Length: 141
Image 1 (cartoon, rainbow, N blue to C red):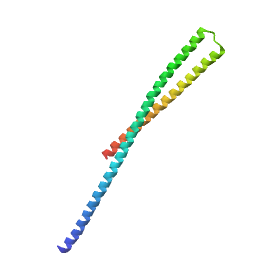
Image 2 (cartoon, rainbow, N blue to C red):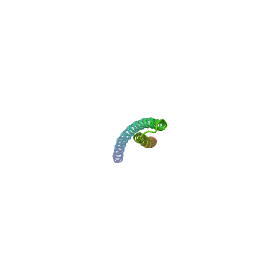
Image 3 (cartoon, rainbow, N blue to C red):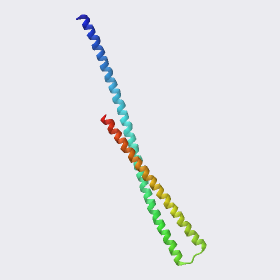
């Protein structure tokens, strides 16, 4: 049993060392996965804030677009009333046309901002879904 016992002891010692190393590496992997999950949670939180901000911008843009529509309608009504009430001068007519053009340009700009905000919101929501799916895949792995 002497020589065989020594050989067994050496093998048992190596198995013990490998088990310890495996345990350490497993702990390191677990810590890394935890750090990755924390970073992803932080990223998801930041993206949610972005989505919330984009939603606020979207709401504000919608309000601005509605106000511009009302402004356009009011400007058109003013134009009709001025034309019906008097023959007007060239300067007054020119001013009304300029106001209408400015209102139309403002409306176009507001619509472009609204469209861009909607696109950004859609992209942020898509990114959040992808990150959520990625987290689910990591958790499942």
